[in-house]
Length: 142
Image (cartoon, rainbow, N blue to C red):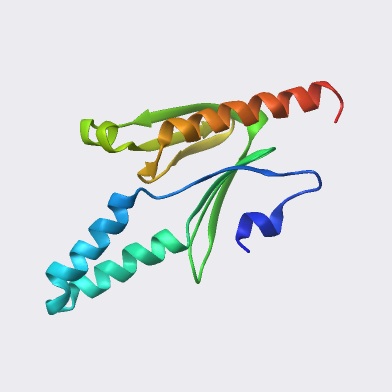
């Protein structure tokens, strides 16, 4: 189980999990193959893969969570009702291969810059959908 699963509140569910794009893994393997013989590639490969394996980017029914770290942990969370904006930065290549960087900001919180993730528009839509559901449940008294 991951950090988010361990910290879910009562009646809180995971609505969407973002993933690193396959090009990120491809780049890590490419570094290993090309630079592995001089040991630098091995370090680059493991640094990239550990980042991938230990990062969680999740939207729950109540909050947005960005968790990084393996030995030490850093988390940034924004309640959906306090979310201000989600901005997408997507290059031409990113549009072709469906990946991009998102910047999430909330009231009283700095900007959270996410790495290149797979299907950024689907993630952005999941945030919007979860936000609407969260506002409806607050309005109905749940």
